[in-house]
Image (tube, rainbow, N blue to C red; front, side, top):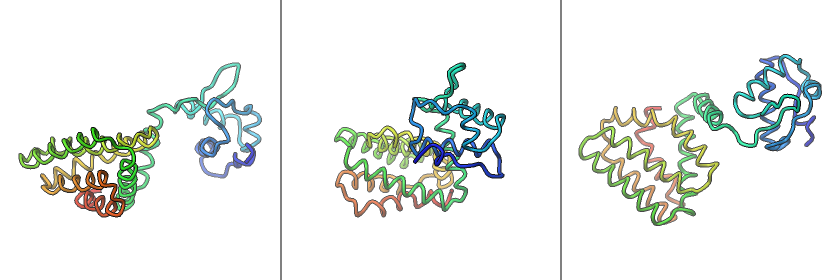
Amino acid sequence: MTEKEQLRPIGQKSIVEQIIDSMMDAIVGGVYRPGTKLPSEFELMEQMQVGRNSLREAMKVLSAMGIVEIKRGDGTYISTQMNASAFDRVIYSMVYDAATGGELLELRQVLDEATVRLAMEKITPEECALLQESIASMRLAAQKGDVAQMQACDLAFHMGLIESCKNAFFIRIMKGVYSVFERSIGENIRIEQVDSQAPDYHQRLLDCVRGKDHAAVAAAVADSLRTWKDRV
């Protein structure tokens, strides 16, 4: 696919936003790789059929997001490393724009299942032991009725499971998504006070990982989300 085929003409909506969308599509589609110098301002205006002011405004936004680097006297380049805070904003936008509780539940179900399945192939005995410790701490917190500790153990378990996947891009996505889920997880624990079954739900997830039990993953994840789903 050529640059001209990838950069579509702009419609009647917000011009700046659509320029940004078109550029992001080109980047995601592989037309522009990290470090690539973009065509001249005039060429981009011709390809997307937009004015100079709108294009410059869009480039300022992309630069602020860390997507492009504007080098005076040289041109504009795709950044070699996406700014972490920019990526976090994308994740927040994706999750909040998903809108409905049902959609968020579906998203978390799919992502948690993917995490468990990926962890099955990459987790170490030492990482399994740390996850078991998180469950033990969660069980103790439940017995004491310690809501704050319960939440901390819940998140520690999931972060540990995510880290065990050993895929930098997946880990980045999941940490961004869980930073959004964190509030509803905490709210769920406060509302329910303490779900005494939560440690058992997490134990089932760990058992799936240890036993590489692909058939049991969907049910185990669904059970672990049983109370959370009513709070999103």
